[in-house]
Image (cartoon, rainbow, N blue to C red; front, side):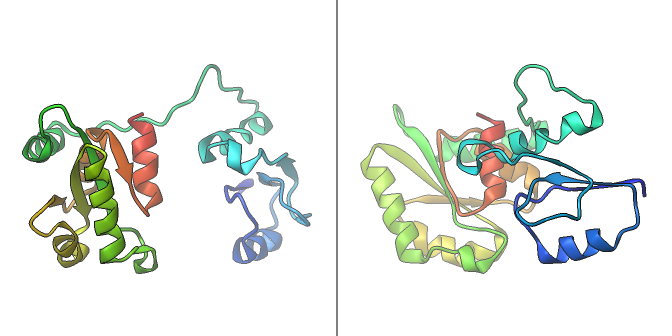
Amino acid sequence: FTAVIDLHDDTSTTVSMIISLLKIPYKVAIEKTGQKIYTNTVRKPEYSKTHVIDRLLCLTPIFGITPEGSININYKCLPESINFAFRIIDSVKLPGKKIAGINISAGSDARFWGVERFRQTADLLSSLGFSVLIITAPKDISKAEMIAGNTYKMTYSYNFDEFAAVISLLDFLFTPDTSAVHLASAFN
């Protein structure tokens, strides 16, 4: 390798150890406190005011790349996934109401917020005039059924594209999972 690019916002002990052992000419990163293992760094933009994509784009001048205009992540769903999502949304949407999706699944079970809390969130969104859709990964179907009860509709899919398509049609998303947040951002 000629270069390694550390895309972490914060210091990772494991990544730092590996990078410090590499005998390569270029080690690139966003500036990290106390890190002298990098050959090229850029000042870290304020975390609370910049999206992760914008923070990572700060690395591009090191490579002679200057992005023009605004940058946005895009994701294009397959037509069959969009059809799947429309069928789900049409089964939930009530005339004059916006759709709020509550995704209860995340990469780690530690992020599960609890059946009662998710149910209270659904009740609150419903009281604010939303049609509510509970979204789950297949592994959490039993939890989603407890949250939805007889009051709310729920959906799950076995592939990421269908999950993304459902998110693309929501007016509001509540989720403990960052991949869902990035999708919502991509779909504005």
